[in-house]
Structure formats: C-alpha cells, structure tokens
Length: 167
Image 1 (cartoon, rainbow, N blue to C red):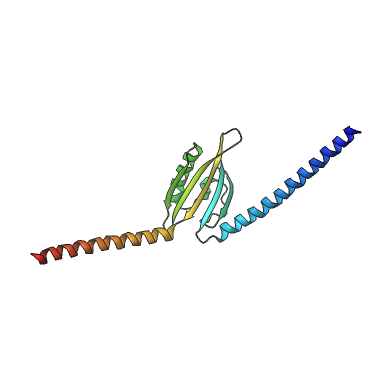
Image 2 (cartoon, rainbow, N blue to C red):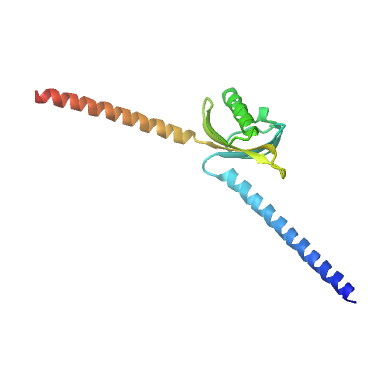
C-alpha cells in the first residue's frame, strides 16, 4: 500500500513540475514577444542577432539595419564597407574574443558589440551581436567638435588681438 502512495505522490510531483514548466514556457513566450516589441519600437534603432559557428543566421530582431532575406553572416550586412569589417570582427568573436567596434556606411554609423556563445561543453558554438544605429549621436558629436574647434580658434584670435592691443 505504501508503494502505491509513493507512486501516486511521485506522479503528483511530476504533474506539478510539468505544470510549472508549462507556465514558465508560457511566460517565456510572453517575455519574448515583449522583447521583440521593445526592439521594434525602441527609439534608437537597434538590432540583435545570433549566428552559428558555421556562420548561419539563427535569429535577427530589431530595426537597426535592414536585411530581410539574410540566412548567413555574409548576407547580414548589405553595405560592402560594413560587411567586410563585420565579417572580420565576427571571426574574432568566433575565436573567443569579446568585440566591439564602430562600422560606418555611406549614411549611418553603427556601434556593434559581439559576444561568443558557448555550448554546455564550453565550446564556442556561435556569436551573438547587438548593433545600435548611433548616426544621430555621431552627427551631434561632430557638431560639438566643430563648435569646440571654432571656439578655440576664436579664443586664440581674441588672445592674439588682446596681446597686440596691450603693446
């Protein structure tokens, strides 16, 4: 009789565990949907992707750059300048390095962060990347640098004129 109670208790625990996992999966799906919505509507264009060690595109989400039909790393970046640099940097990440860099196309500037992905055996199985379109920030920075340079030139000219006036 105790054996039957033990089996029943074990089955009950198993049932509760399955329900918890099912609830957790449902919550994970909700979280992923919110995550995707966040990326699609984030005010700074951002894209996140994952590639395998064979350079196959596993996933891509976001609005930072457009590549609708990408299936591999070679298709992920359309602009040749960005593509060459990005492939080189992904190779570094596939060797186990954490990589961050700026990539500039004709019209945009991207800040990119790459992290190696590891499997259960601590072997590199791919790369996860995040790219932010920082074009607006780059334009603002360039304008600020121009203002600072102009101000420095004016201050220098003022000092020169002031020094000559005192003589």
